[in-house]
Length: 325
Image (cartoon, rainbow, N blue to C red; front, top):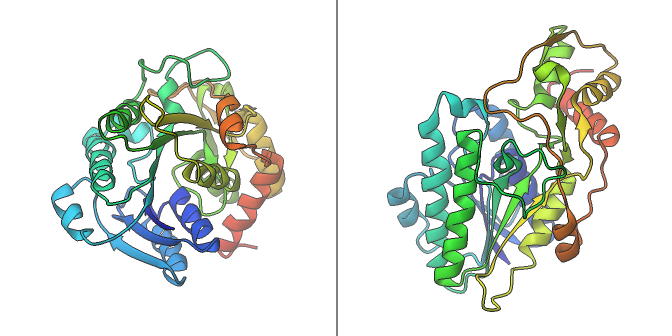
């Protein structure tokens, strides 16, 4: 199978690409290698992929369809995993146009690429648990209202779901959206709490703990996420009269207290963190928790990695990547 993977130099994208190559698929990777965080990390992920047979890379900005569509003309793929996006809730407060370009225009570009691809079978794309906004009904279910986002990032992700449903309706193109819940693990993102806390604790610097630690997150290990993404890719929604569009939560099914996560991280590092307690940040939410009923029923998805296992694996990778003992 030939699979397009966008955001292939990103955290989730690179892991998904490796898993597809491992099982014998060919992968067409797209990424613009932007500088939202250290490009050297993206280049290191990409270098590992480029060393593998069956992988081809195109450096393209999906927010520029006039460049992307001609560049990929003639490239064949039957399925796609669209993970390229401008991530981060707080960054959207200061750089809103980056989200409009990457998450809205970029998503439409991918939809258009897929609908014009002969023999195309299925698009899986990244949504986010952020779409639930200030929802206080726990755990979050895919049937909950998601029309009251509290960040521009969340609003763009909900817009992606709506546009995808429209393409499924108009063109009978099978699409599956995955609402990711706080993904972490080796080769992770430097802008996320797991990395930021690890970096600070090892440097003997204090960590900023928002909402005075009164937060919960459904921390999901990358290996579980990859299994779920590929299970979704392998099972396109049926065109049975209704638009062939689905949306699933994909998380760990365990909402952990932030202070417990920090305690597990301290244990893995063998150090105690100095904590600076701060108020809630604009656009953030107090808690997330994933109801996995539908993805388990339809795809057999079952996460297996608690943070007591996943965090030490992240720490071991982090130390090796930075040459620390």
